[in-house]
Image 1: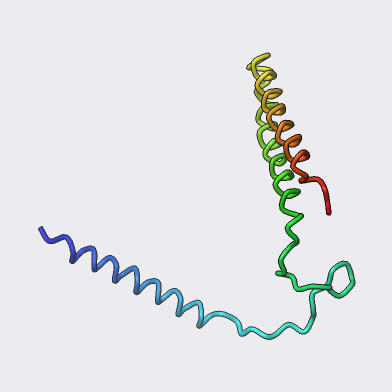
Image 2 (image 1 turned 180 degrees about the vertical axis):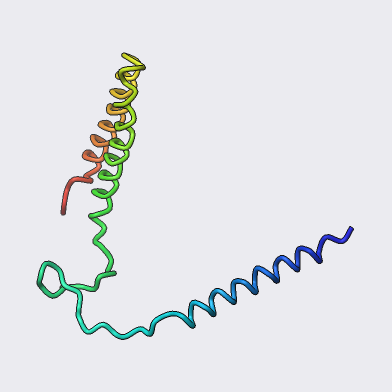
Length: 116
């Protein structure tokens, strides 16, 4: 059995469809004009470029924020089932919060909250 001709035919049809859709989008796309307005930050001209790099001291704060963001992500469904599950759900949530609090204590000990 030779399975290559149907595979190559399907690949050719997919590639032709891709080229046709791309050509159609370029043909129907509106013409682009340069924008005369400049970006602003609170009404003032920006001091740096919009895609400039952030200082490294922001990353520990960002990781701590994401940890507490994940905490809230787990707490919302927990609120819905805590009355059905009972004391076990409360114990599990306090264990989860204790682990997060241990992470915050570790981050504080390592200096993640020091700004300089």
